[in-house]
Every structure is written in C-alpha cells, then in structure tokens.
Image 1 (cartoon, rainbow, N blue to C red):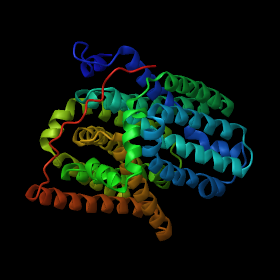
Image 2: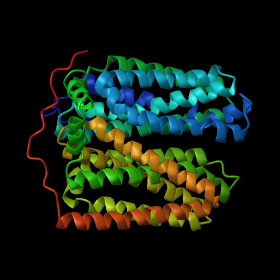
Image 3: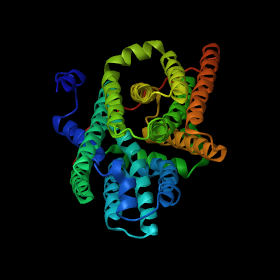
Length: 425
C-alpha cells in the first residue's frame, strides 16, 4: 500500500479507488494460473499425449495464433472497444483451460492453443486500455503497478503449484484454483468502465481504413519522430531476445544439472525480479528520460554479456542467477519503454503502436526460433547465439542513436486531445 500511495498521491491522482482496484484485481487474477507450469506433464501423464506431440503438434500453434491475433488487436479494439476485447480475452483464457481439462483429442488440444493465443494477444488491449483511463502524468505509475501485480501473481501461482506437486495433489485441484482465478478475472473485465475508443477512436480509425491516404497519414503520425521509431525497434528486438531466453532457459538448466529440483523456484524468482524491476520503474522514470537512449543501449549490451556467460558456464547456480538478473533488467526497461512510447505518441493510438511493435517482436522471435531449430545447435551454443543477437542489436542501436543526433526529426507541435473524461459502467 505504501507503493500505491507513493505512485498515486491522493491529492493529485484522478484515478478513483474503485477503478484502481478493478485494474489490480484483473492484473492479478489473469496471471494466477497454477496449472500453467505443469501443463506439459498434465498433457503427457493424464491426457497421454507424447512429448513429441506436445512439442511439435500442440504448443507451436499458440505462437502462430498469437502472431495473427496480435496483428488484429488494433482494428478489434478500435471497432469493438478495448473493454469488449478485454472481456473476450478473459473468457478466451477461461475456455482454454476448460478445453485442456475436458478435451481428449489432438484436435481439441490444438484448438485450445488457438484460444490461448487469442487470450495472450488481448493482454495488449489491457495495456492500451490503462493508458486511456489515466492522465499522461500517471502512465508510469499505472504501468508499473499493474505489471508488478501480474508478475507477482504468476510467481505466487508457480510456487503454489510446486507445493501442490510436492504433496502429489491431483491435477484437478490445479484446475479448480485456475478456474476460480479466471472467474474473478472475467468478472473484473465485465466491471471495467467503457473506453472512448468505442466512439471517438473507432469512428476516426474506420474512416482511415476507408481512405488509403487517411490510413497512411495515421500510420505516419503514429510512428512520427525518430526517438519513437528507435524505441519501437528496441521494443521488438528486446521482446524477441528475452522471449527466447525464457523459452530455452529450462532446457539449459536441465543440460547443466538434470537432477536439479529447483527450476520451478528459479522461474518464480525470475518473476519476482521482474516485478521488482517494474516496481522500481516508477522511481526511475525521470532518470531514464534524462539519459535518453543510452539506458536502453546499455541494457541490450548487458543482456548480451549475460547470455554469453550462460552459454559458457557449467555451474547451475551461476546460470540461475544470470537468468533471474536478465528478467529483472528486461522488465525494468520494458516498463520504462512502454511509458516513454506513450508520451511520444502524438495521436494516442496506443493499441495500434503496441500491437504492431509486439507483432514485429513475435515475428522476429518466430524467425530466430526457426533458424535455431534448423541449425540444431546445442543449448549452450544457442545462448551464445542469443548473446551475439543482443550484441549485434547493441551496435545497431548505437549507430541509430548517433545518426539520429546528427539528423534528428522534429516532433509534432500539435497537442494531443486529452483522453481522460467521464467513464460509464
């Protein structure tokens, strides 16, 4: 509560207590999914799918589905409203785990991954929605507090699920807890206030789609300014690299020490480090804005070094520590970057910016993952490749920032229309 009071001073904040509680409850319940860390053993031991089927025939579909739905988030939010998309996403995630519980066929599991991809994509709508319901000076506080809540929720769910697994509790208990949490999530989504995108933004964006010149102008205005363009590129590159580190982290743990039973705790610790980074972002906003692009370039360089050490280290505790550190670095910079992009966005089409940047990151991640699969490198070599990827990105951003200083693009002079007004339930 001390953090909330510091982040949202009662005398200056225009956010009502009820709205803040709704946003925090939604953030917590949407990520409190105890069955998630044990989905693979559940599918192989209870549903009797082979590990090959889970790895090749089931799980990859969620990546492709999320890629498509992410690209569709902008028109969906701007035609249907952010709230409608958030509600659909909450029920989509609920449907995902219901299918996982009740489904038996391979086709049902594949459809389950499609609904999961949709639900994961709608998290962008929630990020954009929070920017619509708060004044600009509170972007950082709201982003930090909701991100911290989400990451802590996932951490608590992971620790709880590991405790249940140690006690050999049946998987039905994991699902019951997950369904209760998602029931709360759906309720909170239904109670969220309507957003103005259902009127003002949907009308203007629909006009853009009916007019090629209008669409081109909207896209140019959305990514106007060299700083915003460079930060958007950082968003995509860092997202792709960090996702790969997360995806292959447990593989590396197993390769170093196949007998370790602490992997679940380390993943939870990485979420705790990420939540700490998101927590600190609200206090680092002024420092980061004064340093400009340097802090993001240094973040890439540091992650490059850490990935190389992960690839060459044979000590499990060193790898654990580096894995947790990377999570903290990324989540801190991602929180700062999202808000900085929001400040630089002149037309306030947040969902358009967020969805396209995330789509680019997902696409880059998919391409890199395909290259790794084709190359058939060892997991140690893969982390060296991740280090090389971050190193190359660091050099590119150093060049872009230096070039931008010598030929900077002036920002738009027009003031954005204020987006905080009366909200109806």
